[in-house]
Length: 197
Ligand code: UDP
Ligand code: MG
Image (cartoon, rainbow, N blue to C red; front, side):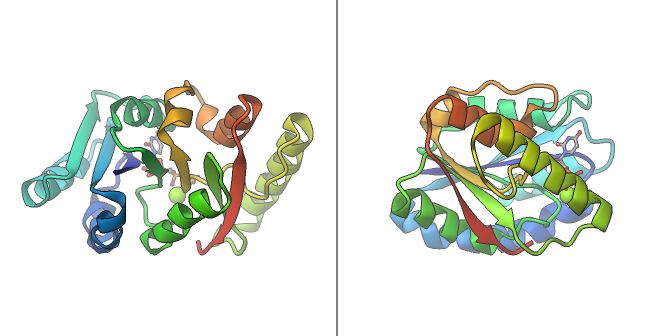
């Protein structure tokens, strides 16, 4: 079974369009993966995010919602998702459609083909501003230098990981940015795949 973990903060307009694309993909991989669940973590949104997710829950029993009373940040939301996930394989993705659901089968294939414990997306062509791209390059070369894990896009929110890795990580603060490094330091095999952004 796969668990898709999506932290969301004020994403009311994105929930329905995201799920419309996500659900056929999950239904197509479901036969191989024996079921799926989508866990939204509403990180204290002040818009209609929770209501949008509730609408999905009425239509699809595989949708789950965890709600924070206030905004705790993406790491805390991610951790709540990790604690709750029941799948053997976890997918983490952003809720603003910058991560394209159609790439999920590629992640699942890469976990198997590369015999990896975690597969990280590499947005080789980024739809972000130049300043953000530069900050990201500095971040990646610095964290590569410190940890020894040489990947291009360590901060990419789109990832696949085995349940065991998620259950062995504890993230808070801004640590969601360091998931690949943390997994690598614990001895897990981390790979990357090129994805569209
Ligand atoms: N997010 C969250 N809590 C926060 C900030 C963001 O759960 O305090 C969610 C957000 O809704 C999105 C994902 O984390 O689904 C990535 O956030 P954002 O798009 O702001 O990050 P960026 O793409 O700029 O790295
Ligand atoms: Mg974003």
